[in-house]
Amino acid sequence: MRFTVDAGSGTPPYEQLRMQVVDAVASGRLAAGAKLPTVRALAEELGIAANTVARAYKELEADGVVEGRGRAGTFVSTAGDPVAQALQSAASVFADAALRLGVPSDAALDAVARALRSRD
Image (cartoon, rainbow, N blue to C red):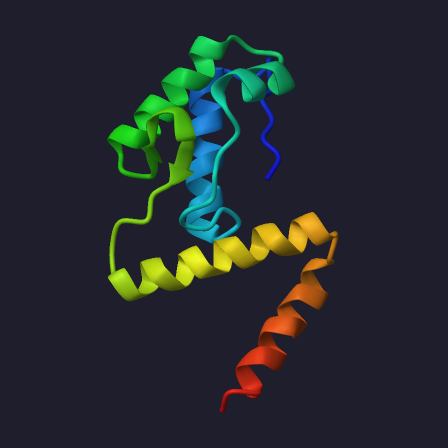
């Protein structure tokens, strides 16, 4: 997931980032359990202060959108239905594996569909 900040916008950078994360979570582009970039890495990528990213993450955590897990990082919240949490966790692990292997999204989705059909 790529984030951007428009320096010419009247909306503060931390709020732009916060809204992008909320939109990505709501649309499913960022799945429950997905790890967000570190504060320092994202600040460097966006060319903004680390405190700006930290503020966005802090507000997202206060809203329950993300969970800070100390040194492990910041993750999209998995609060809610335990079955949905477990499924989302498995999906996140699979998505990470597919990305590491360089498999395109459509091929990864086809692989899941085939695996599910084979168990019917």
